[in-house]
Image (cartoon, rainbow, N blue to C red; front, side, top):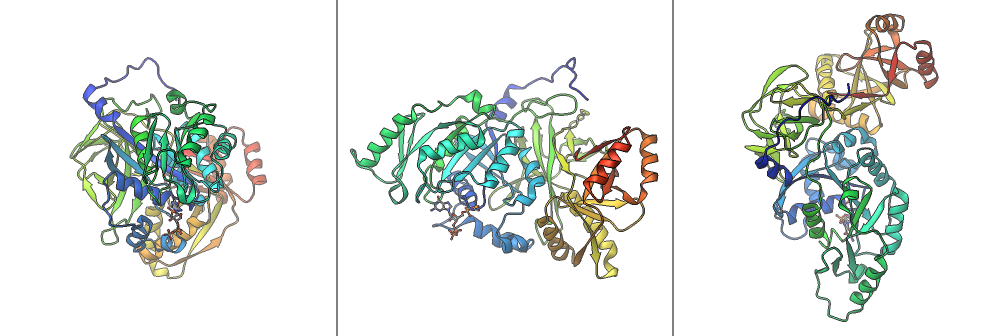
Length: 517
Ligand code: G4P
């Protein structure tokens, strides 16, 4: 469907507009070890979201608190779970979405990045752009998400600042505009000079005439040939302002927060099948981009994370759940803070809230005050690894079936039911997802499983006229399966076989991405 230009846009409210304008919804993207966790903790602390004595590391804390329900996170030292943290700073409300650090989780990461308006790209000053940073950057670029660069670990031996800027510009094909400049390096790193406001932010006193200041002034002059900051280019994702700092030493962290307040984009409009939805529109609309079950091991809860795309949310509202057409009462929406959650009394376009539910809400679902629209842009990718789940204890077959559905709804794996009645097949994009599935089935559902290979390596969603589709399904019963929504999928043993099916059935289309919602 295309946008209908004759449709009149809904009214914008000024009061609502004020609230929306001060929302900043962002994610941090980086290669493992660049300092995302440390920076997250420092941002939350600067925003007053956590009070910690001394240098307690958030990662350690998080690992401990989450390890109960997901030991894999502790064992592998990676962040498997996407979560959101809300805090206030400088008159703005920040929603910081945590992106999983491992490359296997591209689907989950992609969905998280659909829900942000801006990304902070953290780079290790000694290592420059690393593989994972680059991949995440490409995802942001696909969606024209503005990027603020934070060059971290300036308190250690670092590459030359100009070389780093050149590397970012060249590898990512971006205009790079230094917004701060380091004063001192490695052990003598003392703070930053804010080029945009002509202001020194020092954490250690640096006497006038100190050679660090002299060097900084010299370099800043040389940096004058680099592009100046341009809000429009930044908003369009073609220019990145660069901040230098040390998350560990808490240098440059408030520069970054101040930048998010000052230049960080307010909530963007979101695409639907029919029209873009502006964040300051009156009617509430929300998009579910993440489901997380069993967050609290003591309660079998299931949280849907929704981005409010427009309007104002008030607790107790009755919304329309577009996929089912049913009413959905918003009794206990929640905000997540670093160390607790709180009931949401009101929230605005750009905010991310958790909505507890028992399976009604799925990834890609739209909620509105009545308008029949569906948000787009939340995809499923065709899995590249297809396995049968082997159950050692036959008594647990029913439990396994339910658990698989729940975990598939959460987006941990995709679930395919073969049309010939064979045992269900799980599909994943990366093998680590299988480990996560296995570990969660055991820890949360008490169902130990193994995996068996299948003859299949390629999956494509099949679409076409009803009659042609039915004929095709009947002729290929042993290679056809239904996904969680009942949509037909062709499973093939090789790309060659898949291509043959495509060539011999020109009336049908075969898709490696499915829009959900
Ligand atoms: P990640 O989430 O991106 O994987 O990185 P994380 O914050 O866990 O940081 C990775 C390592 O880098 C940690 O050291 C952390 O202390 C260190 N680090 C982060 N920011 C800075 C910085 O600005 N300067 C310096 N010098 N180091 C920094 P670790 O040895 O793995 O852990 P730990 O022993 O410090 O707990």
